[in-house]
Image 1 (cartoon, one colour):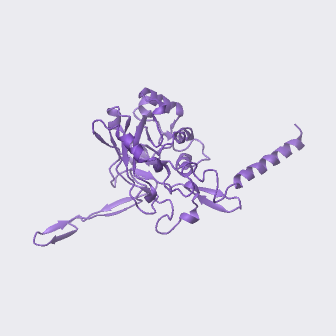
Image 2: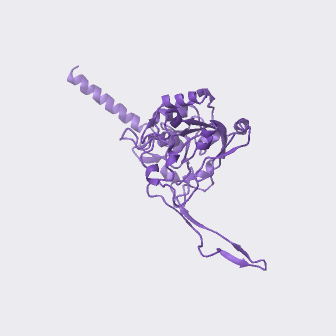
Image 3: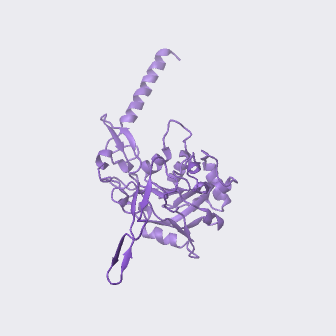
Length: 330
């Protein structure tokens, strides 16, 4: 191949890549507007939770047994990075009282924390974004459904995509037990769960892949909750899903995902040039939310892999996420 032809080809490829990079505007980009929910939507995957979906999920309840899937919030729990959790109460007596002839007393607390980003935590639509160069050359932070940083950022919470936009999640939950499939108590550090693992685990559990329906919540068990009492181990390079499985999740029209570690995706990501690409792909690009730091041991003990799942994010206006009390009922 002659050098002149090679140079021409390189120039064509260069300008093609530039065209792709700039072919995005406030109105239209590679992941906005959302192909199902359309421009302006701020509810993402929770849109799947319709009355019909809730009634279908309720048919899974046969015994009424309740499983707590969330961890207890406490000062000693593992915290990611420099996040903090401080709860203060009066150590010397009640916060107020006594009052009245009946001598009533009462207690209160002061809580200072990142609200939705500690403990069992729900990542909302305003949590993850991407810095993008628009067609006009301007640089913008773009979030779910094309909302830009200039539309969102404010001193007292996000002006768009706050957690208050998420509808209560009452749906079918599907647990995929990767640790048991691999024959281990806990997956190894930084193990990337493959689609072959997912399908193998479902087959072992007696679940056909087609059991997953629009709006279901898909959960992955890595065995990582074993380290909940050890912050060092809990925060050290957990296993998780990568983009291969994330694409499969999107193809299933899931409302959300979740796992028993702090991010659901493998850390660090095998491609060192990428930072949290699963968060980016699921939340930012597709409006599929992520519930982290769960526990599934009781479900696994009872071989309960499909269940009614209930989680209602607390409506902190402008918040990026939410704490909560996720439960499964069979």
